[in-house]
Image (tube, rainbow, N blue to C red; front, side, top):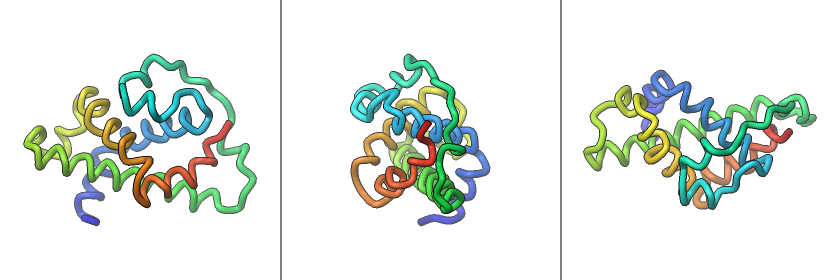
Length: 134
């Protein structure tokens, strides 16, 4: 794990992390399913956002740990997505990577949705996103 890159991702991409928490919220609550997002990441725009209590519904004593896992795991996935785009030559810097919606939908979100079913990071996210259940 490249700590310096992850820090740069966090500093420049805080809004992306919050957006991903919103995606996880919609997934865990069944507002949209993973296969829809894998096939068309922009489909998230067509699904209305259903507001409701979420963190206050969670009664475990490990809320902060779960939230940290979601945030750190998301940063790692965004960092990996950026690394792929950088190696492919489609982006030149972290700050430029976060400037367009297209890079978010077709780069970051698509990469993350394809990563969730596989590997330990996806497992970490799925095993901790229950704090987002309405």
